[in-house]
Length: 337
Image 1 (spheres, helix red, strand yellow):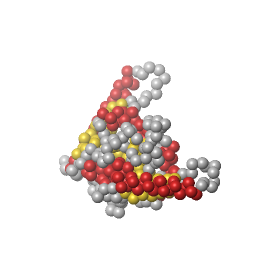
Image 2 (cartoon, rainbow, N blue to C red):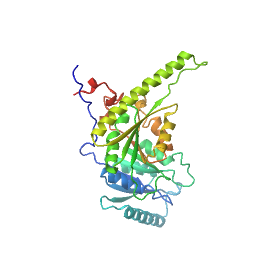
Image 3 (spheres, one colour):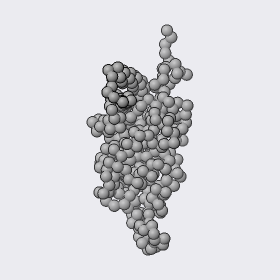
């Protein structure tokens, strides 16, 4: 029997010319600055410039002619705030620019991001004492639905370290090319932080149509399906781990069985003491719902993740022609050459 060729690797570096731009959307009030250290940490890890953006929005929509003196004072205060944050965030190995926009918050954030190549927008989640930290606000919801590029959501109760390090980076994968496409970015973050990558696959319990009590054969069928999926998931994780380990990345894998994939991921984020989660905007379900910007898992984590969540929108070129499965899940013969 001829020896099998090694698996074709995915890229673990970004394409040439694919530099990032980090845009941290700074709010107002006592929680204005909690995203800034994370913006700087991501910018440093990716070698990307950081811009602190604040949008001045009219306080009274019904007033078409705001007081120009008041607006001048607001501009002055905003520039002073951003300038102070930029100085605090200043780092010899990077920089923090400031930008001020006027208009509707969501419109201005999206307009600014559209003018940047490979933009990563950083938003705070749950900022303000009257906001439920388990939910995302309307600004986050609308920016996520409209803005290009990737988004980092930082809970307001995330690590308050002025120089956060992401030592354990958790990456949910489901075997699809969509989920797999976040690995190059996750690897860059891991290398920059000397972090451990934790690849997680949650095997869902399949649903059976139940008109009455399940028959013994039904229960056995479900058990066989779960066992088969667990074997496949573990083999897939082992292949990815082996390849990434060969490229000098510390990788650990977890295969977990659950009736609720999304809630289990949140539990694993906590139990594994993850510092950062990197997830694709869409997974296997993306091939059935191409019109949706986010799948059910990423949408759930947006509201429930207890740590910063980096949601990556893969380029079409990274998933074209292989949306149904990731390259590590294919038979060796399918990835030769």
